[in-house]
Image (cartoon, rainbow, N blue to C red):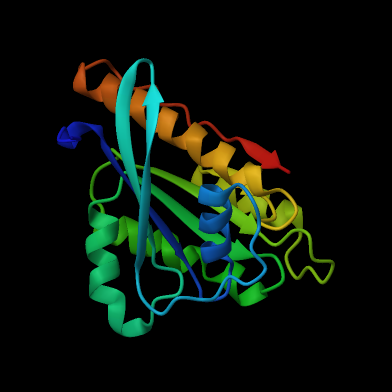
Length: 195
């Protein structure tokens, strides 16, 4: 049985309704796109296991993208306890991109330490009616010092999984460095992945 709290990684997805968080998660766990993904009306949790450097870790996703406003307090709880935060927007919904600043401020107001990782995810790049240019997403990620993924849950289901696995490994490295009291690097890494 898995009991080590230190090996538990909590991942929260933040964003507006309809940006595709549910589709991203379904492709993460099923390795394929499901056209019949429905928007869920509450915070959805799913998880799995990963082995990194011969150590077992358990991760949980909290999908709060589809949450109604009345779940705001619950969302605060999830963010405060998160290790990895993914801010997701849809390239076909300009408003979802414009709320990225809101989500960044929401995280900063509710987390006072730097033990977490935040990344920006642009979804639905398979659709031609883009309202957000690739460079805008890249610039927003650079502005905040976040890693960035521009993807499509439909056309490249493995991209999100690979990106999240990379972030999990990065978090494990970061947390083991902090627990060993090694000085952290001060330079921010900006990575941009387009799939």
